[in-house]
Length: 258
Image 1 (spheres, rainbow, N blue to C red):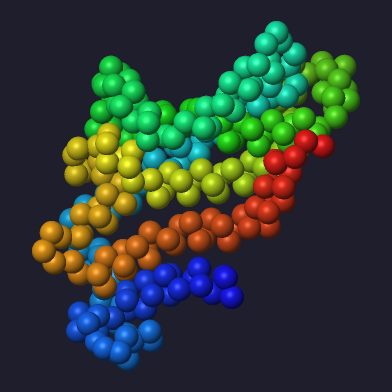
Image 2: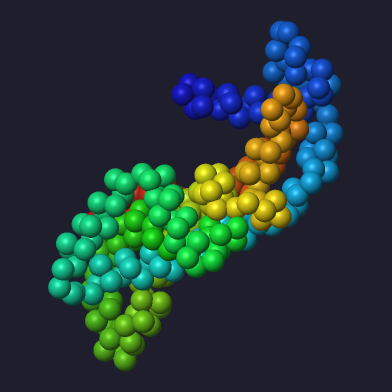
């Protein structure tokens, strides 16, 4: 029952995306369109900048996933398997930053990107994802459950610390890595606030910004807007469909220490 209630907005979005303009204001509401049409989806692709925004979103999402996973995996390995002075204290400081709302950091992030001359650049959306505490926490907890005997055996065979990380630890954390891949891709793909702050040129806009621009001050074609929203869901649905068998296990394995 709860799942059905949660699905109602998505069912309404699908229904509206298949209606023509007249059916939107029909009373009683048509949950199943009497004359469904795909013209709204065709009209979405006629809007200025829609293809470029999709490419921008793909670039930002893939870049954000790559940067976050590489940096988080290395940081998690250091916190889990490398003994150094102040390790636990530093990790607690990392965790404490999770209590800071990301919106509070918009102004400092904006100023830093300005100093780097990256404003109105897609890289200004990727670089802030270097630091992701949730990813570090989940990977560290997974790595803590891996016995040190694996690393000791690799070390006896002459493997360097980096090779131990790449060839031993990372493959054993595959489930958590794939889970984080889905989460980070979804966050990057759907992100609206950070692109709104960092980007000013229409050619650099991501898909959520372009879709928002379809909502006019005096008139909004909701059927076309929701058709665009349906299109924006497809990459996430496809990615989750491929990775779903790892997803639940990754959340459980990354959230506990073995």
